[in-house]
Length: 329
Image 1: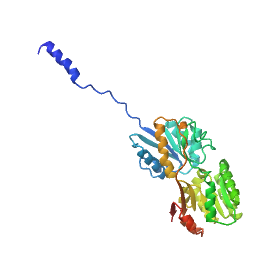
Image 2: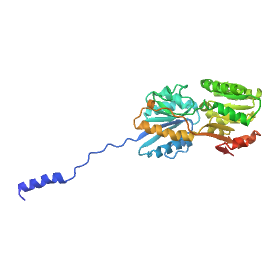
Image 3: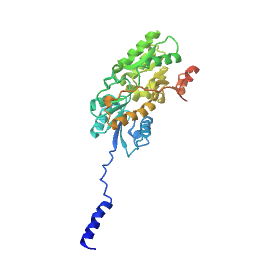
Image 4: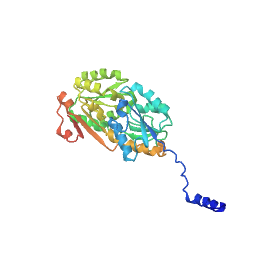
């Protein structure tokens, strides 16, 4: 082959041979922080043992996210010790995770820890009153997610409790000063129905035992426990004290009943955490949390503990049992 033919062959080869594709940038794996009061061990990995975290992961799977490919979690659990929450919040902020999902006492700690990392509320009692968002429709800042409608449901809880324990004896109400809106809502509901309440305000959890003893001494016929997040780490102890004082108690959330309490009526936390995944999805795709309206729960559950009822010598009326979403034997 002469020189000119060789050059023509080489030139033709440059058009025939495929060009190497440019290197594609590696897909970023998002890091989702999770902050709760429970054990960290119950929140680890793609099949978490904790029911709410498991539902968050389920919600992400339903949206097409694959653990390890599209996201991983950075769980931090306070092991039932609220005093550890601020340190864990600061730790997640130092890791610069892409978004944090949290609830209860973890939310104020995160508010103090960061104004930039998006926070998805997996249930907040009253996010506006607690200063977490500017309004439900326009949260502003770095918080969004779901409210538990705790204050709005207080009247319904009182109605259920009086259906269980009719009579003129006052209902003792356990609450804390930061949640004064809860007490005010209970007062308003009771006045409208001419029911008597006994205020059990506590400034810290060390006063719970004395407060419940005073309720028994004052002749209270039942107990309403407000401030779900504050008292939740002490749910088992509160249930024991209520049982010891022969006080049938109504709680805000299911975990209290699972810890031995009598009855709860409130938002379905599993559904709340599954829906929190939708907020993560929008934030990871670039939407600012302050532009995502806070949503309300759509599922509520009435949970009754028959073992607790038996220990109190209480017969649950059939009309209430028929309305229960779950009965714990």
